[in-house]
Image (tube, rainbow, N blue to C red; front, side, top):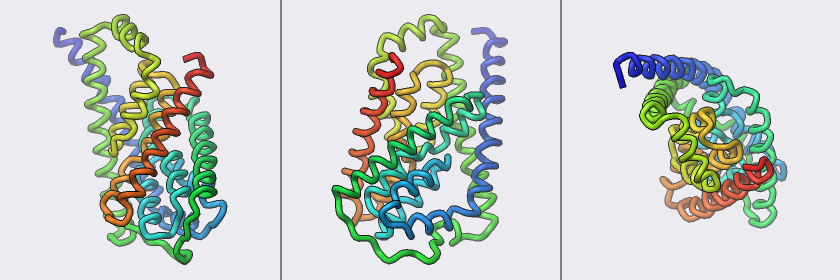
Length: 279
């Protein structure tokens, strides 16, 4: 590759990454003001908690799964409600898709994740009977234990910068690969193994980091995976939330079957959607 091509790859990657940074920062700064209240609302519900949890999980940031795990670890919500939150959350994917000009698929993605999360969460609660602690009058969580500058400015800024770096690296790598391999050759390689993409996307979604949701979004936007594979990968993509469960000895065993349930649902959903859409 000559210097002109390298320059174009870097400039395109920087431009796309900058728009993602802006979206992520503004969104996280705004949502930091009502996370605790929403968590308290979920914990106050009984039979309908998985539906409320699934709705809460649609907020595109890693904080939703972390709050859900914290509520579960403290005994305020059931496993079914936590699974509903995990299946519906998308980490940073929605913001990446929105900033990348793919807003038209977001309603379908949100509806699918909300419906699947609600149904599975309600089913798990019906099968696994579990008592919860008394309702919270107010749930402060982690955000309000810090000062306002940290909660509403520095943390959103830090997280937005992390996402910016992930997107920048992914865009540079993908742009370079396309130039080296060639668009036609790359499409041929991916289309040859397209029947494995729902499974592979779900495995990638297991990575407890917002980088996995960014990668899945970028792969979809570049035409490398289908909508079904994207949906499957994002269903299991619960970000940092699962790490909160593994950090507590009392929730390690339950964390294993909770993530296994999410993974099974994600793979099945990915293949069903791909089959309906003709792959």
